[in-house]
Amino acid sequence: MAVLHPMRIRADALPLAERMFNLWTLAALMLAFAAVLIAPAFAQGSAPARRGVIEILLEWTPTLAGGFGFNVLISILSMAIGTVLGVLLGVLQVSPLRPVRSIAWLVTQFFRNSPWLVLLFYCILLIPFQIEIFGTTIPFPGWIKAIIGLSLPVMAYMSEYMRGAILSIPTGQWESAESLGFTRSQIMTNVILPQTVKRVLPSWMNLYAVLTMATPLVSIIGVSDVMTLTRAALSAEGRVDLLIPMYLYILSWFFIYCYPISAVTRLLERKYSVNT
Amino acid sequence: MEFANTLIDWLRPDWFFDLVVVSDPYNRSRYLAGLVTTIQLSVLSIFFSLIVGILGAAVQGAPSRTLRVLVGAFVAFFRNTPPLVQLYFFYFAIGTVLRITGENGLPQPLVSNFGWAVIALSLFAGALNVEIFRAGIEAVPRSTVEAAEALGYTRLQIYRDIVMPLAIRISLPALGTNLVNLVKTTTLAYAIAVPELLYISAQIWSEDLNVREMMNVLLVSYVGLVAVLVWVLHRWEKALRIPGYGE
Image (cartoon, rainbow over all chains, first blue to last red; front, side, top):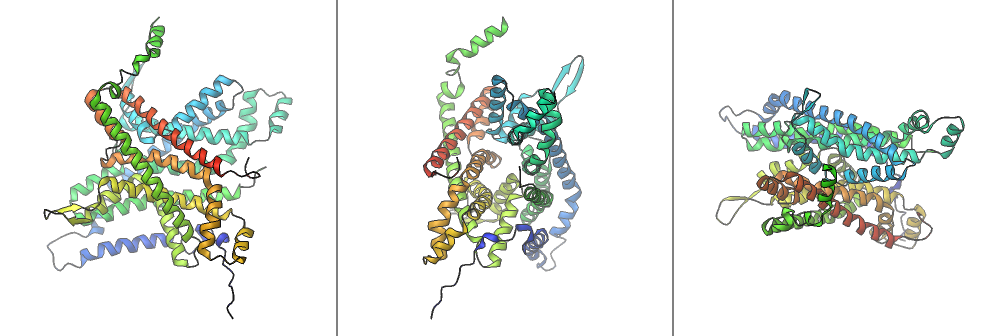
């Protein structure tokens, strides 16, 4: 007699990090993929002195690593500037004064809804290459303008996260601090903002990962980063069978840098998920 | 009174008609063509990314472990690598290798740069959508699914008729954010010379040397596009709303 088997419900599937797939198996998968692509090059007989793909990749690694380090530097500086400005803007967004709130909201929405590449173009073309304040000349090389351009959307996203975090603090905190005689700015700096740090941390780390993945955009506006160097290396070597391996190589660098960040973000989100 | 003169100058209505994309017919037609290309890119990418998201979320609940690992690897790869590098990988690395012999006997690319842009953007946004739909599917109450199974629905029927509609309603806010980001990410196609809005604007400002004006027009255009999408999603959300859930 036929029996209706119960459907296995997948709603309790393990989180990504604990499944059979994890960083190591993905690295193994990517290595296997790369090996399958590169192996035919070794299958040629006694071809005259054509270097192996892996040898070329290793030869270019120091240069590309320098470029990647530049990307990381740009992301760290943009994140720092954007976080500071974003916290300020978020605090302004919850101001009791209506015009301050509206202007802060407008600025946030404007920079949130603009494409990152358009903001980068804006900054690279419209910020002067040097400004003179009080007799001293401050130069603005391309990468500084790119950092400013990338910090603007970071500021907008941080402002939204801070607004959400500040509004999630119980009103009792505000009232008890006020009854103790704190001024509004003292309440904000000593009571509210320290409590928002924990709530904002997973979103902040996720934003950093998104920002790091947006840093190759600066190669379009003329800053020499890892993508510019990769394309220069590919045109210098001029080999068609090097294209896929080298792009996969760079992709794996970004993956190895960003995957731990998103894994830790998920861990923190789950740890801090129960809020008051 | 320099400031007052500047303010009056700015408030005069004919500054709108002095814009080079409004007054000059060639620039106007170019700009509108770029806008149409951007809208085409956005609509196609949104459509295919939704399909990728729904299929991926379905496969993530499959009993076969290999399939689940594959989808997990796909999602992790596209979430943790830069979309611009993915686009370059598709267009320069795979596109150079994928050639067919054209009518005149010479090798031609199989997919145009517009096509590669759609493919890359759909896969990128689709991977993010898989995560969003997975969260929505997990939020569907298990009792509902068990009741459907008791009524004799097959797994595909449960997914198509019961789980997916409920999951879409639950995941609509996060999906809206992702689709707005997708519209903004279509500017990446500038890097592979797709004639979309940013590319055309760059051509116009390099010819007419009016960077500030074109930048403002560009920013207003993108804010307008995003506003249209947000309005559509808001209407969809309101249409799907049922009393007793959410607000």
